[in-house]
Length: 454
Image (tube, rainbow, N blue to C red; front, side, top):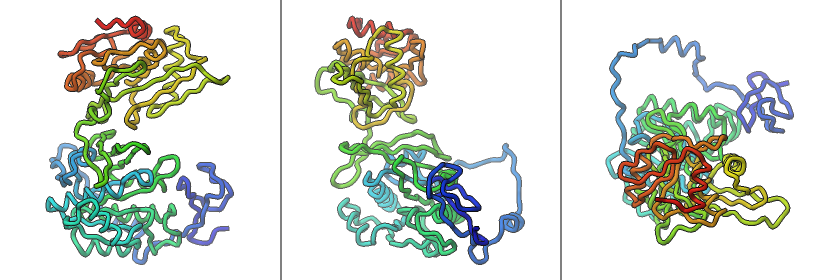
């Protein structure tokens, strides 16, 4: 039986139960319920008292609302993902795999913003001040007027931020903070939720932009309760494949800008370097295109990006053919293979299929269906696509090639990089580039097999 004022919180999903159980009823995780206190800080008001003290006012939709001011950090790719800069009083949650470069990115953001006149602070709960300062020196940022601190106590951090006025504060990381108002240990669901809530309230009341670093689980989601992602104004993820120097900053949520916007960086000895033209980075234009390669003209956020799909269809050496994919959804690959076999007569059921998105970029939009199918057909027929051709289009289960959004932006980006042809849905308007529109996937596969590109 639980003590008065105590509950049991699941450390996997954050669900709260009134009594202990061996398995969490919400997510099914075993031995994840931990007893945590519900004690309030001394002097804290109940929600009803706080509402009465604050009062309630209403405004109309027609009232004037000024555009939010923004802090330009000087890191253009970071500002792009944030919607044009960091909004004062906003809370941003940044997640990413260990070692991907989260601390490096935020150190550069704080240093460049401080050089532009913003009052910036970097608070680390994982490193000593000497370690943070040493990393800044290696990155050539030692002259930036950034205030450093090493602290894990939530009360000490809030008191310091109330005493000194800042424009931008980085806290690395939210899982290391602890509040003396709760008995649970640092990193628990209760402590993470309490720390995030207090820091978000501080950001709104003081007008300071706070960037919180969040650890991720083995599934790639930010550790802790999902309620944290609802509390903050923006959720960013920093992605990167091991073995590749490229890093992708992606916006999953943004109350002050577009979602799914990306920023591209390249990791080097002196930190991260911004990539202004990611299409040129992900493409290899050194020679003739090999069989099994197709250039996809995609859209990431508001930015058109060209990336190469690479496919290999080979005889199977085992009883069960292999299906391996990197950078694309494996379920989407299975669907495209089924359509190729059922609607186009391309038999791949007894052959190994490998598909890779070059450069470590992960593609999620359905417009990549035709590029993947073109790469597979090119490899199966050993017939290379033209060097100056891009491909895009969505494939339906009936074998139809369907139109996609922002085709003009895709074609303009392809023309800017020297491409002269585009294979895609019927009815495309080239605008200076030769368009080859197909309404059926079987016609596109036959065109690749016969190498008809005029």
